[in-house]
Image (cartoon, rainbow, N blue to C red; front, top):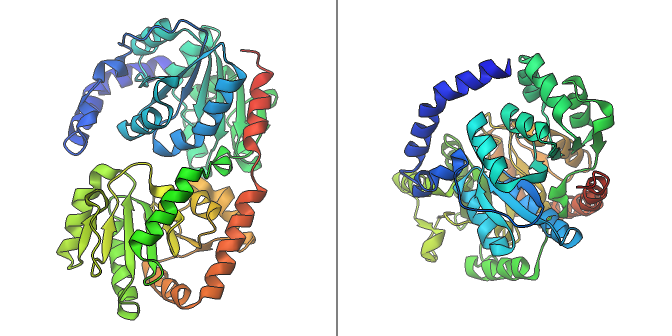
Length: 420
């Protein structure tokens, strides 16, 4: 089955390259450093290597505290951090600098994987979330590399998809040294996919251990002053996707009928889409500005996010945060960041990527699930008018986030037993 998968992957490589080329029209970084994606680069570590892979921005941010902890715990090792997206790359470079070696992840072809492994010769591969690439896992395990899934999530939908390729999936599960699952429900699904129970632990989510550094808090305070939150409510819509902004703008129009001074901060998941998003906002008649222009007039209706690394601070400045990727069939994004700041948070009906967290938060009255954009407008109007209700929702969210910290220490303890 893996040979068939590999042959198909080789056949589809031109499609992968075309996709990068198309995306490079908005983000030129997609057509840069392409050789790295085929395992061709000049890095030659001189120390034993711990390789950590994080796909994009969210995974990279979640991995930051772990990377720093591992650097302290294993001073004689070199951390090599790979990402798939340019935005993830920018996060790694900006936050970690030359304390780690960074390259793009090799594509899942035997040649690319083996060239990469030849160059860095890792003792461990730590994969954030659930990046199950058959060749990446197979060739790493064959060389004796300890392969660990960290913060491992598995939705019911994803599990059913993997089980359609049951033989390939079961083989991958047997090649994993350890899976550190986000929650028991995720752990159960990995077992159903064939993971040996001895290779499984539930450690919780590293996303709860995010760092609200002095710099992040200071930036949030600066945003509150810049956005003039004392004079006007701010609705942050975080990490939206193609097809979702239209629904959000419909809801925003209804809210503005009641709260004409409402400012919406609209942050696309992929900042390179910001130009298209702001064009859409302006076509609908809204006074809109890009965050990077640092222009905000008293009559600005919408501020469109086109920068990296600032979303967490915007969560600390918002009156209410709406989680994107949840009003289309995408599965939602991380609600823990606004919760850490005690910001009242709403999410749409599609949240299977964070089903355990959202379900638990609902039970604690720490988040509200909104079924439609029309209901989003209604609930936003109510919350803007009801400070007591906002404060209660935000306080419950913050309490939930604080109560679930501690995954970092459990992950580090579990990794120590692997002796890499």
